[in-house]
Image (cartoon, rainbow over all chains, first blue to last red; front, side, top):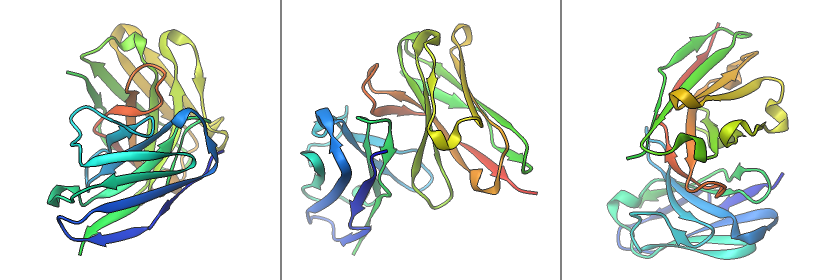
Length: 107
Length: 120
């Protein structure tokens, strides 16, 4: 099973700042089969990025994904108030697993 | 538009079974891989298994094999997930999800979630 480790666990930033979230895999994720989700309290997760760097329909271009192999990054260029949430990475190369999440909160 | 509407909350005793439904609409039900994902209170997301289109089978993680059964009724565009031998740690919100495109592995569409509480 591929284990995904996200860092940091909590990230405290202010609106307008940029955010960088990391997802590290215990073994290589082939074919860039990695996605990112955003989850707000009481809601289902929402797909942001799939296949490492493709934005899902309707996702603003301030969200971008990058990486390969074992190291992946979600970047939010300028934080809006609605971006403060929990973010999960997911790999779907070898079965399906999620990271433990990064809580992005307002400083 | 694509919709996944799940059945309502359940309260079960330890050792019992629960069966959750997920009715799909707005797309061709037979053409997409479907999954179940759960989330314990205050915890992260956990993959529970996949059911392939057109009766092509299922795949479950080892930790749930023998306790989880996923089925689909194509005529009713409905997915089912049954979990047996319930334990307190099975208390969670359970989501049915549809892949972004068939075989993609990422989850574009989510049901609203079904809370299952296991308590004596």
